[in-house]
Length: 70
Image: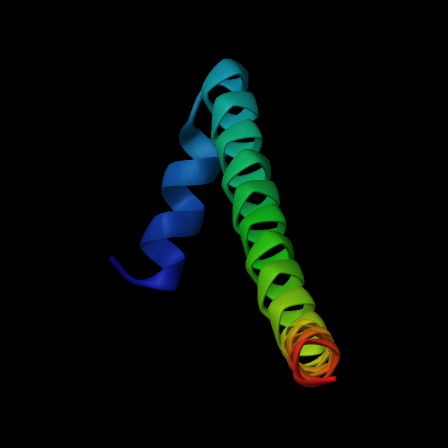
């Protein structure tokens, strides 16, 4: 379907159908935005916190090992 045919179909649709079309478009857009936001948050959190957690575990292990050795 080309652009002109799509615009003609939208213009000729009853008002209720156009409202539903707009609501579906807004809902899908919001869903994609929130999904991307969530994925970005999980990736950012894991990239930012994983090195610090790893370093913390290594430091605790080293302290425990040193305390056992003495």
